[in-house]
Image 1 (cartoon, rainbow over the protein chains, first blue to last red):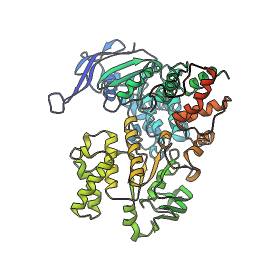
Image 2 (image 1 turned 90 degrees about the vertical axis):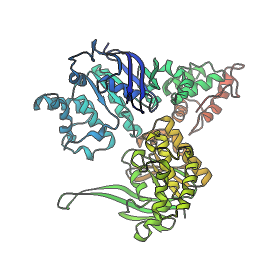
Image 3 (image 1 turned 90 degrees about the horizontal axis):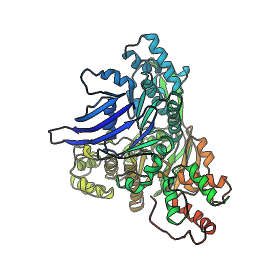
Image 4 (image 1 turned 60 degrees about the horizontal axis):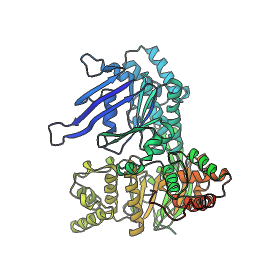
Length: 282
Length: 301
């Protein structure tokens, strides 16, 4: 497995009046090539957790393994870890700064010590992966649309050639089409390059549609870790945590409560449509 | 005439180089004529770059028309002597709550607007009281804004606007940065203000679910108004909305898909309850004795 966390605890401001236990005994294993969704309301610890996975935060207590090696052992190369585990922050377009798109995407690989040609090759690949062709290369990142800027920012991380890509709400603030475009692109990276993806999202509908497995964080603890179908069966518990299930879950649960023999693990529109049509014998 | 009226409104963003030569002109609003009725809850939809935020900024004279006119209760926004009155009448709430909060404690923040308008101190406190109550944040009066959740911050920002006693509130994607709970909180607050205080609301959003309760939905694309009607009228046109890079609520889409498969359902189903009203009788017929029509349990949002 690519990532393994053992009994991770993290305390912000330890010993101060603002001490806060942000992660409580978190255990998890992520296999190479998985597409994992991470959900939890604001303050649940999900952002703290992902910052541990590429070493930006160091656990107060516990062990974290990347490809079998404990990243907290002495002499571990944190710089290399950050190349392997790429992190795309929320609103990553706020971090664009170069004069044109291409130079911006080259920044990461150059910083990794690659020469100009090698960095340019990586940048080209990365921009192709996010669907931006050469006509964008010389444009200023600041004159692009919101969705385009975000793709440039994601390309900046992809250019560092990560094995694991973590995205913190990559679709926040985008219109529905822009949202679908970004998520489809991420899905392609997962399918075509077998990249391990961790997607932090507030949208239960997106999570239900794209990921194979969901981790739910609540008050610093991992409370669920299962397939979307299993996790969303617990919609009442999710609501108590300030979350919800996809709208479709409510449709099938309501039908079930009226006695319709429908499969309540359905979470997407397509599944619900087919099941309702089948039941009504159309 | 309504509270807000625009006539053949055009707005161009003009980019100039160092020598002030015009490099590019981008038309953000292209001939919008609208008449918005007082007391209504109006939603504006449109993809990123459709011109909806630019339109919002015209409504309290942050931007002024390149051509055409905007009136806020008969006041032409392009006349400088109207500026203060216009800004008193329409309050704005933006996307990022952290950019809008300036006070060290909540009551200070809410009082800033009326103080700036020269309202007497006693009256300011009265307004702070009322505004915080109207958004359900009275208990947080003496708290520091930066300890609040995103939804709470946004409600404080709305209270700050309410304290200026506007006729109309324009909210430009107020929920885009919030989690589902915060989103619900804010939308509920805005609906209450509209219902109880009669404030005209203009809500700009990407979230289709937030629009179903509106009186009127306006869809913008390429700076033009391309659809205008009730939520049911708008959301019954699933394919058309998709062509404008938009979406419909999931329940609406499911009903649409079922209809495509030959199920006879009305157009533009907006809520879970409506869907159930239409589906349950069919299931009751198909599974006699098993399916009950009255509510078997409390589900739903």
